[in-house]
Length: 328
Image (cartoon, rainbow, N blue to C red; front, side, top):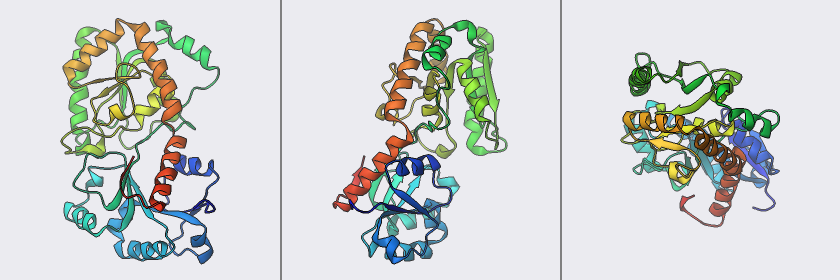
């Protein structure tokens, strides 16, 4: 594998920050190669496809798998939508879980223990897209400004989908934030909750809201609709610390894999605990900022997509070395 530097990608939406991280390690990503040449195959270490092409175009995927496997190349998909799987039918998911058209199934959560879709599973969580979510200008000056309470517009904020009438996946989040708003009003705590629907909030507005809010919340994720518990961390859980914000997140099984709770961020298990921690941190602003700054340093060191690209390459290397099962 040491002399092979090509990575084949048959997924037009393959996450650009990961591709950039691979290219920064001197790998060349070749796009849209469902019929790779012998030269490409001889120089490639891996082939990526979109997970949902396994469900939509299984015969096409099977043909590609045979082609790349003949050259000792693993077929890989990274799924960031488990365990809801974009509402795909369970029978199709179960069928392709048994067929194993993939060699490596990468996923942002290990909550769905019934479906692995491959003999080898890689835990590959979300991360901070530091090309977008980073501190602009002089860091020490910005952190000094963030330690001045008078610079904040809001005590608490959140932006994201909260229209449960339009999307059933957002109903629980809508109920939570409606109830939270009532409690915050009663306590005189200022907040800004923005329903974004299908729109992506402009990046500058996202960063401005995060840096204008003492506490930035995460609650729920569409990909977890009907899931028994919250598991994987949405990208916002890394993006908020990456721009200097303080993160207060709903309790998630994978949080402990990435953060030390109370040191890099904090979490809550109910609306009552959320309110309690909001009040505690607003009363101890210095501690809040200490945690936010440690969270920033931690994310920038360990949770960028450059880090995830390294994890991916290491997993591919271990696959070539004969390692199977769970790769972490």
